[in-house]
Every structure is written in structure tokens, then in C-alpha cells.
Image 1 (cartoon, rainbow, N blue to C red):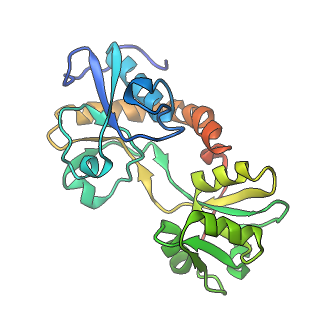
Image 2: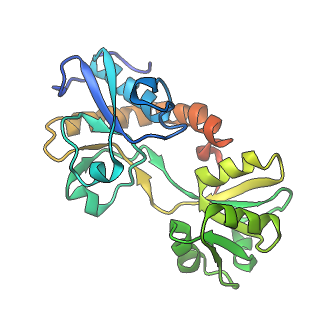
Image 3: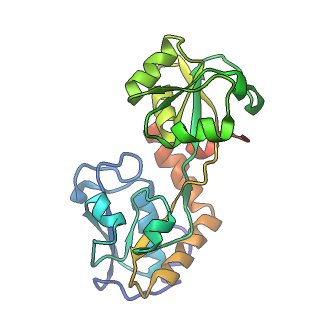
Length: 249
């Protein structure tokens, strides 16, 4: 564990424990098929480090419905870590910590294709319907050739392998996983920042949100979150999302 045990203090909903809520499955983030089976992963270990700095003896993992959670309808917990994007709408029903992870859009190409951010405009780009990339590519990148839209991830990746597009773009974690599964045929050459950030969610009525935010900020500052990303997300997705270089639109 990083930092000093008991450096901070809260009044947890259950004495002696940090009650963490999340939504399974979440490989890499919370590894395990059941609440009892979750023993590691980026977010679980982040919670364990938070508990350590609060001087609490255990982390209780509770699996909840995601829509209920972000809708402010889950009660009796200390914090939620579930890859929750911080939005103004969600702030109306909950409180958020400082962001601990930025969810970028990765650029996946066939192995050997060398690209820089300046080359993007001339590419045939594929995106998946309904994703952040489906709006980001035409709105921010404005390629010379209109992006091709596919109904799902399998169709998107099949198009790349069949040379129907030069590159595909979707969440960096997703393209890293696909590159790893391709056995060297595909690679992620860069990513774009979209401003989408994950934060811990606290109940709107939480009296300890400010303290928990300070704990998380200290774990970001001392490099704990980067170490967790390198250890758990790299293993789950075939590469560390934080290690993928950023291109500018």
C-alpha cells in the first residue's frame, strides 16, 4: 500500500470498512465474476489504497445496477468506482472526485502502417455506431473522406482486416484489446483526448466526499493510479492505455 495508514479519516457507512459499489463484469478494473470473488484490479486496488489511508480494515465490494448507480438511486455506500464518466447531468444526483482516468479514443491500424496526427485527414476511417468516436471523427477530425459507420465492433474490425478502411477508432481500451487478440496483425498507433474522464462517485448527501476526494487526489499525485494502470489494465487489454501517445486533432 502507498502512503501513511490512517492519514485521513471519515465516518464510513459501516464501521471499520470501506463500502465500495460497482458493476460487474469489469475485467482489468475489478477482476472477478462475483462480489466475493473480486480481489484485485485497478479500481478494487484503488479502493484498497483508499481504505488504507483511511485506516479502515477491509473493503466490502457490492455489485449494483449501473443505471441505478449513475441515476443516484443506490444508497448506503461510501464510494463507487465503476468507470463512471463525469458529466454535468450526473452531478445533479451525485458528487464526483477528481478524475482518476481519462478515456481516450484509440487509432487501430494494420501492423507496419506508420502514422502521425497530421496524416489522419487523408485516411478512410471506420467507427462504430453510437460510440463517442462516431461523433468525434466528423466533428473534430473532419477527414477528407467521410467516416464509414459500422453497427458493431466485430464489423468494424473485420472492415479493417479486409482493407475496407485504413484505420478504425473507438475507446483506447477496446482497440488495445483487439490489437492483442490479432496476434501481431494490428497495432494501436495513437489516441485522442475526448475530455471523457472517470471519477469516483459519492452519494449526493455524502458528508465525506471532500475527504475521499483528497485521498484520491493524493493517490493520483504519488503515482499510484499510474502504477495500477500499468499493472492491471495492461494485463487486461494487452497494453497500458496511459502508454499510448496522444495526437492532437
